[in-house]
Image (cartoon, rainbow, N blue to C red):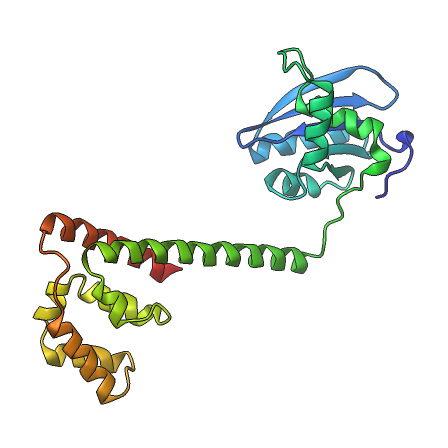
Length: 256
């Protein structure tokens, strides 16, 4: 639906979203009276409120201004064809708030009321939210989730590196983080230098074979490095807690 004259909407609403509840300011078209309400962020409450609106205005279009273009409340309201959602740029609302509420007094207009003012006075500058296809919306979310997971993996890897530097820096020298499976599996089986040096040569050779470490020369170098390594510290007050932390980080890294 496109924005047109005021008469095409039966009512206008400013909705200030929050995690736990939403403040709502409503004005019927052709009236100066405003109504305020608060909605708990629960699906049944939002559904009941939307249904009451549709019944009250007999299915006529209702304009809703909110500072979001996606999120739980947007998805909850988008399924009602008669509710037309208008996204307000946060910067626009912030400037509008600053211009009209400089005192920050308790009787200043709420954000919900300011959003209502914006859609009433400047609707020609606002565009209704037009959802993309389900496939495109899913793709956008998958890309966003992947970016966050990659960021989490980088952060946890960096924490693991810092932890190993405290008590077992040799693992960073022996294995590249470019091969995370080998890196994590070795540290899971031998979380300290002492544990690795106590391992039998045959056990270490089997481990490297299972992880496709090819070349006798490379394997010989790894085994020699393990046996000849000098501990950074022998203080169990440092080794024990950091080894436990390393195991916790490795478990997270495996998932990511």
